Image (cartoon, rainbow, N blue to C red; front, side):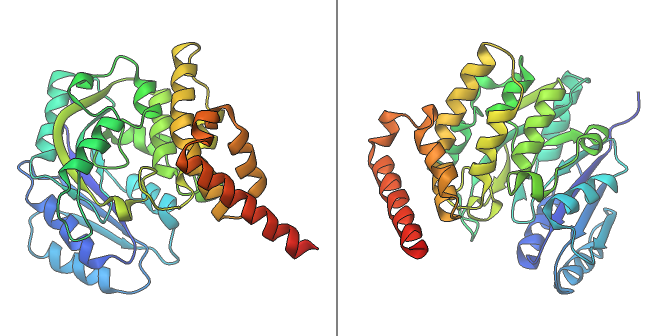
Length: 318
């Protein structure tokens, strides 16, 4: 059996200070990575200097490339995947951190189940300055089924994608599968690339393992997760992706409906903010944005905002 090797892949763009922290979290791993692959979309050479200084202080090979012109998030992520020669890879966003035992703990999952596709743990939410928020961490992990009752090998891999148990980063994944699956371009999935990648992965592969331990720290205010309060198209695209994807009959449709109800309010707000009033009205009338949600305080605010935007549009046309 081929020995397992691990590369940590970090796509980055204009975040040299945060990238330095991410790199340092890779260097202190109890099981050192075999390589760190960095793809840089930055407009300046500041990031290159950070990587060069880091590489000179560690005995870990660092494969760095400055993308000119920039590849954007999906292209940059695919690029670091493609340049990975290890059997397994771990994606790490440039503003997030690995806990010191992350690589070792996740590799341990393959010792128990050699046929795994992916393994991942829990996330600690931190502020922009790195301060942990334990209550937010508990909410995040529980909302995405990363709690003790879900620990171990997942019986239905597709559910790991639909529920977003498979995280946006910090997972350990077979390199060949990552390279074959790839991220889709922003023109197709907006800023929901991480969700779409995980969903498609879970719908086509078996062998997902949730380790009930903390392995990563995530800055939700920067990461672009659809759980964030930022309006960055992620919820709107995610809603559309969940509407269209093929799921098993029965349990799949029940879970689809549940997740669409969770995402619909955020998707409607994003549609309003981007001037997509027809789409916002469709979401408002959707069965996943039913009367219970419409009559809630948030639902009333969304309906008033939609009406106000509609009146402004009519006034401009008249």
